[in-house]
Amino acid sequence: MSLEAFSRSAPFTLGVELELQIVNSHDYDLTPGAEDLLRVIGKRRLAADVKPEITSSMIETSTGVCENHGQVIAQLREVRDALVESAERLNLRLCGGGTHPFQDWSRRRIFDTQRFRKVSELYGYLSKQFTVFGQHVHIGCPSPDEALWLLHALSRYVPHVIALSASSPYVQGYDTGFQSARLNSVFAFPLAGRAPFLLSWDAFSVYFEKMSRTGVVKSMKDFYWDIRPKPEYGTIEVRVMDTPLTVERAAATAAYLQCVARWLLTEKPFQPQEDDYLAYTYNRFQACRFGLDGEVVDPLTSEHHALRDVIRRTLRDIEGHAIDLQADDGLNLIRESLLDEDGGADASWLRATQAQQQYLPELVRRQCVRFEGGEV
Image (cartoon, rainbow, N blue to C red):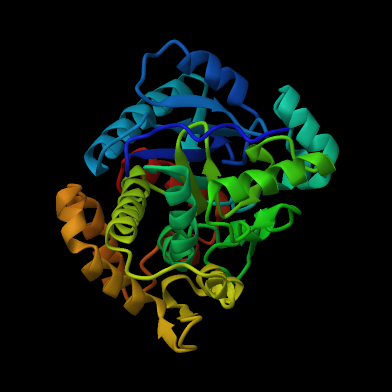
């Protein structure tokens, strides 16, 4: 099977996908409400799309093609409000967060589509354990070769967005000690992790054809890489983020990635190389485990740096691009997070709230309030 051609897209445009939790309004456990919610929301005309995910207690919304942070936040708020209203009619609620704090994965139901059934048949119980919730960001690329260059250049910034979006400290009723435990579930899949270091679309096409001949993959959807090319859209897709608790934080993270991508491709501050991945898994772990309080290793100098400091330097590097892309409102939210000595990301808020309430269903109720735009 040959890889499809890389479509044309406007450089540095954005698309944002959010996987959301569907909970009941009684005990705030996950509930299989996706089919009913899709039926109700299907009557609304929205700029964003809404579709099912692998289990029926999840739903995914995705924006259209956006040029800047303002368009992203407008579309996310519109679809958020429509989903919340539709869920209320069904006695359901929605929330963000990378994991549900106390759901039992064995009670989940695979959503009935041909693709999801095949995934379930192949991966067994991992499919139900994949009831975790992430944010994906698509970035438009001028050409396929530049898409692969950007994919590998962005690998250095994967810990940044993991830490900024971390919102999954609890799994199966327990505090994992991680800021983002969600990625541990993703890493269980055999085609997860990093993409192979290939910088030309011709070389990548050869790789895909070889993988296709093995029968292991049939399309790009079979790769669960942290960042993967999406040739049908003309984008790369960054997949490491937890779903934040608010659409405002989701839009801010997308704006950060857009500005970093524009800075990398236009200024070329370094040349990506295979050695960039020497410390990749360690840096990724640090961000998952400690969030913004983690450290990262520069693979070329072997120097260790506080992740907060590295993000601050990056914000200075991209400042001019942020102005051009009208991203300052989003990046200001990130700057505020870096100043928060209590953690700065949603995972810290979740832990602080649970320490106060000592009741996980109440924690999820408050997650719903935050997602709806309310104050708690």
